[in-house]
Length: 341
Image (cartoon, rainbow, N blue to C red; front, side, top):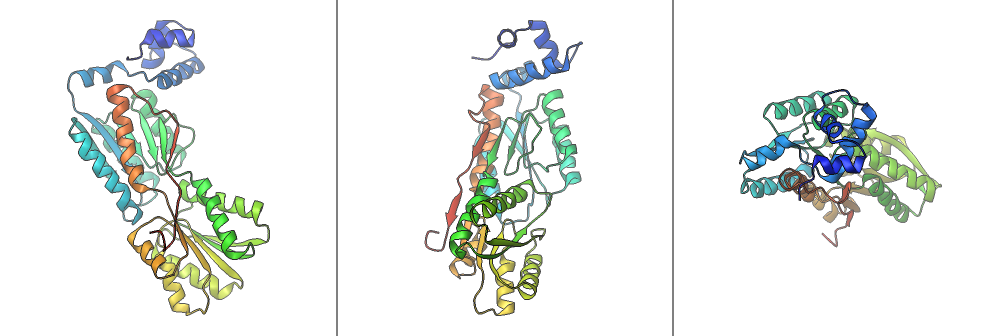
């Protein structure tokens, strides 16, 4: 049964008029009271009148999706999930509009959001760039336009987004630290390679890894954290320079793209015994690296689910008023080696 303004008013302990003013952003009302009412309405699954009217009149709903790092191999699985959801929702008269970002760029993402807003989207699924400008824009969509937002793969704090779909990246970083500790016997130096320092996902993985290394393996040392911009050539350069100039590196963690550069550096240096290597994402190139013993483990985050679930979550909310049961819908942390591909 659809949630009514009267039910929200009773739950909040205010009048129907106060709820109406808060939800429609008109009239004088205490900002804190308005925020509490809007949050309560979201939690109860309230659908604004204009959205109900659009659904009942047969108007085609539009769901926008914004991604990052479109050229990375990880996005192949994410896009496969998006395309499957797009195909299924189209059968129910719901249009999915995709904007693919090439990098982790604030300006690029802001343009994509504004373009989708101009096209009249009713909901938005986004891999957000974690910055104040994007945060304010997403909040404006939700509060002023009543456009629900779901984040996936990467999250952004300080917003009233419906939920997050993706890996618990900090936990995955701790998982990588546990694996590395077992491989190295808890000693030695570890080189960490990230993609973009502005990428919330990469930062969470690195933070979790370092946190667990300090707690569980105090004899291990971090030999540096380097940004590669997800470029294979840059990963190769970082590994080559580190192994040539720093003694005792016996572990390498790559939390983002460009992982093939690790093997290229090993081949170029022709080292007798390579460091242990842990990478992310089950892609054809990374499977090849496992089979050829260039790396030891990869941690996969199920990109297909990350692409598939958000459009369906938004469709259920827009059409049926059904909200997800949890705020964080974490995908599995899958550990792969050459024997269980």
